[in-house]
Image (tube, rainbow, N blue to C red; front, side):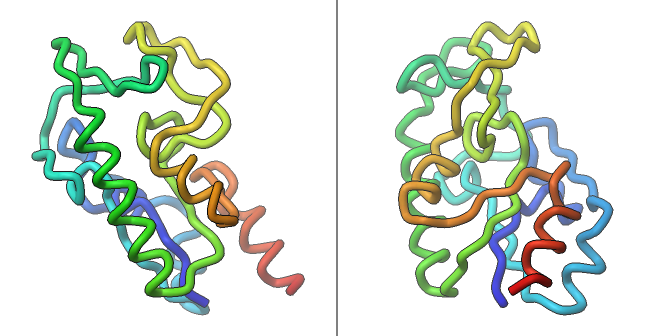
Length: 148
């Protein structure tokens, strides 16, 4: 089975701060499934490192006040194309991210406060029927896949 995964969760140094950390469970998951690494921000044309950004309504705004909504939208569309190409029904995405966060994201004030909501990519994938899991739910995904 092919599973989309935020590349930063596989240790790729593509987060806004230039970091990435291999998450527990990924190696085990990769033994039985194909993990497709993706980074919507990079696919949307943003560099690494980059200014932190948060979702403010329908816009993605950097901490320095730049609107990067177009880049996040382009990245989300590119990821959807890959998702369809690889026939992915599951995705493991970076929690709280304005792109990949699912269920809870930062509130747009850069204060660390969380609100209900989804990142741009997570929302687009969810609307297409992809099951979204954050990195804290990798074990749950493994259990659910094994039940199929």
